[in-house]
Every structure is written in structure tokens, then in C-alpha cells.
Image (cartoon, rainbow, N blue to C red):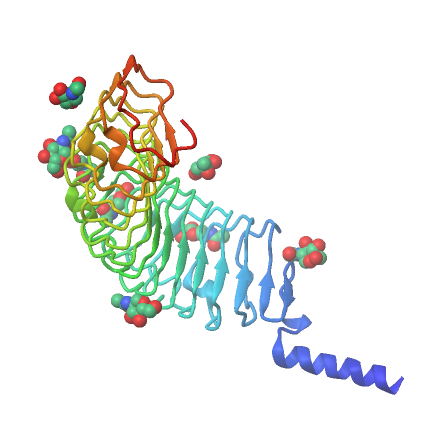
Length: 344
Ligand SMILES: *[C@@H]1O[C@H](CO)[C@@H](O)[C@H](O)[C@H]1NC(C)=O
Ligand SMILES: *[C@@H]1O[C@H](CO)[C@@H](O)[C@H](O)[C@H]1NC(C)=O
Ligand SMILES: *[C@@H]1O[C@H](CO)[C@@H](O)[C@H](O)[C@H]1NC(C)=O
Ligand SMILES: *[C@@H]1O[C@H](CO)[C@@H](O)[C@H](O)[C@H]1NC(C)=O
Ligand SMILES: *[C@@H]1O[C@H](CO)[C@@H](O)[C@H](O)[C@H]1NC(C)=O
Ligand SMILES: *[C@@H]1O[C@H](CO)[C@@H](O)[C@H](O)[C@H]1NC(C)=O
Ligand SMILES: *[C@@H]1O[C@H](CO)[C@@H](O)[C@H](O)[C@H]1NC(C)=O
Ligand SMILES: *[C@@H]1O[C@H](CO)[C@@H](O)[C@H](O)[C@H]1NC(C)=O
């Protein structure tokens, strides 16, 4: 009897000292330790007087408005989930009360505009997800000061262009998602200076043209997704600035001509996707230097002939797909040198 009583008292003291007590936990929320979870409760407003927490999830509610007042007192907050609500705008200074935020999820809302100073002060932010919203434009000032940001996701928004300098404020970014937008124009300097960028997703946009300057300084880039766009030509040396590329997706474009020196310098490239394009011919010089290439996808193009020795430059090729082309003649020496080939 004595010991159960003591245990309860100790448990109570422990909760009071290390976590959020029951009395402090708002209605429709669950509080455990320093985590507050209020998910799928049809909340229209952020509960007032939230207890100090490190983790707050308000996922899948009907919250429309967030203001600076909403997060008052949450100075210890590190992770904030606001996904799946009906937030339309993000005003200046909204996150000023939560300066220690590391993770911020704002995906699956109806955000159209983000005020320039919205993220001011979030100097610790590492992850920002804004997927599945209706963001049209991002201004240069928007990401200013997010010096620790490592992952930024803007998939499935309504972006039409990426202007020069927009990403200047986020020099430490390693992964950038821009899939499923309507990006047509990318300024030459859009990505300049992102020296830590490893993965760049631009799948399913309306890019016509890629220039060499675009990738300047992206020396760490390993994966580049340009599939499902409207690229017609690949010019000489476009990829010279990204010598560490390992995966390159260029499938489902309208590529007709590839200049002879297009892929020059890609000594680390292992996988090259070029299927579903309109490539007619491939010259011998094209694959020069791609000594690490293991997989080459050329299906569904308009290739008619395969010249002698084309594949001599890629001795490590393991997969080569050439189905659905118009190949009529294959010269005797076409596949010379492909000692590792397993699938054709
Ligand atoms: C709180 O937890 C209980 C049990 O896990 C769960 O049924 C309930 O939906 C949770 N409430 C909220 C607001 O997440
Ligand atoms: C949401 O914000 C709008 C304008 O900022 C205001 O008119 C409206 O009353 C707010 N709604 C709630 C529920 O706070
Ligand atoms: C893109 O976002 C819209 C809403 O903005 C959503 O209905 C759609 O399912 C999303 N698409 C994907 C592939 O997530
Ligand atoms: C973004 O677009 C809105 C209208 O959609 C416009 O009012 C605003 O000035 C634009 N911002 C920038 C930085 O271009
Ligand atoms: C990038 O990150 C490193 C370590 O995470 C940090 O030391 C450095 O200050 C950051 N760079 C900038 C420009 O903030
Ligand atoms: C996109 O680029 C074209 C041609 O370079 C230019 O005429 C057009 O104004 C640009 N559009 C935007 C939205 O910047
Ligand atoms: C592609 O970009 C180059 C250089 O930026 C420019 O000279 C050329 O006109 C562009 N082509 C098209 C079709 O936009
Ligand atoms: C390959 O295409 C280029 C231009 O697209 C053309 O100049 C060249 O003659 C073609 N080579 C062959 C063998 O068809």
C-alpha cells in the first residue's frame, strides 16, 4: 500500500518535472513527455495556451489561420507539423516565437503566398516541406537567413520560374525538390553557389532549355532529375560543371539531338536515362569518358543505326536497353568491348 502510493507520487512528480502534466494538455490533444499531438480533430484554430513542447503535431485538421500569437511560449519547439490543413497564407513573423524550430511541415495546405519575412529568425531550421500547395512565386528574400536549411521541398506547386538569387540564402541545402510544377524559366544563376547540393529534382516541369551556367558551382551534385520536360537539345559541355553526377534522368523529353560532347567529363556517371525521346543517331564520341557507366536506357527513340565502336567507351556497361527504336542495321563491331554486358 505504502509502496504503490509512493510510486504514484513519484510518477506524478516525474511527469511534472519532465513532461506536460495532464491539466496542461489541451482538449483534443494527447501529451506525452514533451510531445503534443492533436491530429485529425477537425480543429479550426490552434489551441490557445499550448504547453511548452519540443514536438507539436496539428496534422489533418481544418486550421486556416496561423498567427504569431498561435505559437507564443513555444520557444523550445523543434518540430512543427501543420500538414493537411487549410492554411492559405503565411504572414510576416509568424514563426518568430519558435526560433528553435528544426523541422517544419506545411505540406498539403492551400498556401498561395508566403510573405517575404515569414521565415525570419528560423536560423536552426533544417527541413522545410511545402509540397502540395499553390505557391506561384518565391521571392529572393523568402529564404534569407535559413543558413542551416538542408532540405527544401516544393513539389506539386504552381511555380513557373526560378529567379536568380532566390536560393542565395540557403547555401547549405543538400536536397531540393521542385517536381510537378510548371517551371519554364530557370535563370542561369538560379542554383549558383549551392555547393552542398547533392540531389536536384526537376521532374515533370516545362523546361525547354538547359544551359551550362545553370549548374555552375554544383560540384557535389550526384543526382539530377530532368525527366518529363520539354528539352529538345543537349548542348556541348552542359554537364561540365557537375563532374560528380552519378544518376542523370533525361527520359521523356523531346531530345532530338545530342551534341557530341554533351556528356563529356561525367566520369562518375553510373546510370543514364534517355528513353522516350526522339534521338536519331548516337555518335561514337558521345559516351567518351563515361568509364563508370553501368546502365544506359535508350528505349523508345528513333535510332536507326548503331555505328562501330560506339560502346567502346563504356566498358563497364551492364544494362543496355535499345528496344522500340528503328534499328535496321547493326554493324559487326557495334558492341565491341562490352565484356560486362548482361542485359540487352
Ligand atoms: C490520443 O490517443 C488515443 C489513443 O492512442 C487516440 O485514440 C486518440 O485519437 C488520440 N487523440 C489525438 C488528438 O491524437
Ligand atoms: C482568419 O484571418 C482572417 C483575415 O486575416 C480573419 O478575417 C478571420 O477572422 C480569421 N479567422 C479566424 C478563425 O481566426
Ligand atoms: C498535388 O496537389 C493537389 C492539391 O494542390 C492534390 O490534389 C494532388 O493530389 C497533388 N498531387 C500529387 C501527385 O501529390
Ligand atoms: C508573387 O505573386 C503575387 C501575385 O500572385 C504578387 O503580388 C507578388 O508581388 C509576387 N511576388 C514576387 C516576389 O514576385
Ligand atoms: C553550413 O553548415 C555548417 C555545418 O552544418 C555550418 O558550420 C556553416 O556555418 C553553414 N554555412 C553557412 C553559410 O551558414
Ligand atoms: C521566360 O523567358 C522568356 C524568354 O527568355 C521571357 O520572354 C519571359 O518573360 C520569361 N518569363 C518569366 C515569367 O520570367
Ligand atoms: C536556350 O538558351 C540559350 C542560352 O541561354 C539561348 O541562346 C537559346 O535561345 C535558348 N533556346 C530556346 C529555344 O529558348
Ligand atoms: C546525326 O545527326 C547529326 C545532327 O543531328 C547529323 O549532322 C549527322 O549527319 C547524323 N549522323 C548520321 C550518321 O546520321
